[in-house]
Every structure is written in structure tokens, then in C-alpha cells.
Image (cartoon, rainbow, N blue to C red; front, top):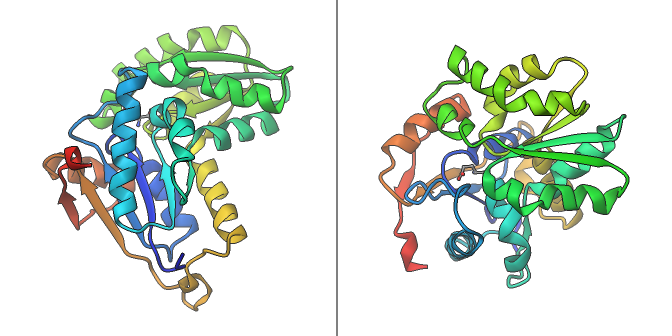
Length: 274
Ligand code: DGL
């Protein structure tokens, strides 16, 4: 496996760019191929069987690009599909669940952890399982907040309506007195300010994407697969390519907000071929 080979990142759509953003920051020399399944997004309300089939196709697409490592940025796909599919491939793959759960276990002090995500993620119990594998004594409270995804995609991150919806969703989390809240969905990091404000200073927010990027750094270093551009001075910037399963226009628009800059090189692919 070559060190110059790209890292593949996939997601149900644009949300995985919050994970890509962390990778760009931590591993600026890596070449990255991002696939966003915008034509079939969202995954979060779909059945396990459908998510699994979509995930298989997303991985097959990235494999065709000879990637050295695959990141499943989508919490819903990581929760219900990745564990079953991972062993079919030789390329190392990581989802966002384990890194997020591990960080929550390390940071909680009162042993009460909240998880928020899509229906698929919450229904799978994947985060709770991971937390309990690490420490069976911890209490986990999970809650689906499906309205957050469309709100974030429409740019409703600092609107009163979003604040009121978040307040309503999180009431039960406040009641159970968690001290750690895992943002178990790609879109939620964009709502960090609102969520932090509602939960208050006593609650630590865990960004699964950020934790995943750290874990990717660790795993690539361990396998000696870091791009050599990282050791040049100044570091060599990697190439970023984007692929989507429908017209790229909306992806380009939302991506600018997610990444804080314009993206070019977006190519449409027919994912049903895979
Ligand atoms: N990417 C999804 C996740 O992290 C959110 C959007 C969707 O439901 O597809 O669960």
C-alpha cells in the first residue's frame, strides 16, 4: 500500500464534511477522496438492510480509487452497517462510533453519558454498546433528534426556531443529569454553540468527527501510512476530490458552509453501478 494513496471518506451526503474538515486540519498532506451519497440522503430514517446495501456500494466506489484507508463518516452507516461489512475488505476501515464512545468514557466524571443522533443510530444502540464494552457501570441515555439534519442543511444554525427545537429535544437529557453529551451525527457539530448553551457548562460535548480524525492519525502512524508530504517544510498540501451521487450544485453550496470555504472538483457518479 502506497503512502501517497488517498484516504477515502464517505457519508450519506454532505454531513461527513465535518469529519473531512478535521482530517484536513490534522493531516493536511493527505490526498482525500470524499463520496457523498446526496442522491439517497438521508440514511438516518432508513432500515438497516437499506443502509447496509448503500454502505456496501459507497465502499465499493472508494475501493475502485485504490484508497489506503476508509473512514465511514456517517454515524447511521457506522452504527448499523460497518461492523458487518468491514471484514470483507483488506483496506483498514474506521467508523465514528468507537472514537466518540471512547472519548465519552474517558471524559465523564459522574458516569452519565448522553448520545444524540438519527433514528438509525439511536435505534441500533451502537454507542451504548461501545460505552458498555469499555465500562459496563456507566449509564447511557440515547435520544434521536431527527430535525437537526434538515435545519443544519438549510443553514438554520443560529435561528430562534432551532434553539426552541433543541431546547425541547434536550429537556429529557437535562432531566437525567448527564455530564457528557456525544454529538452522534455528522451535522451536529454545526450546532455546538446552541447545544452548549442549552446544556450548560457542566456538560462536555463530544464531537465524534474530531475524535475519529485523531484515531485516524494514530492508526495511519502505526501502519506507517502517513503521506510523506507531512514531513516536508512547509508541509505539502494534499489533493481533495469530491464525488456525489446526484447533481453537485446543492452539495457545493452546503459544503461551503460546512468547510468554511468553496470546494471545486465535484464529480457526479452513478452509484447504482457498484
Ligand atoms: N450522516 C448522517 C449521520 O451521521 C446524518 C444524515 C442522514 O441521516 O443521512 O447519521
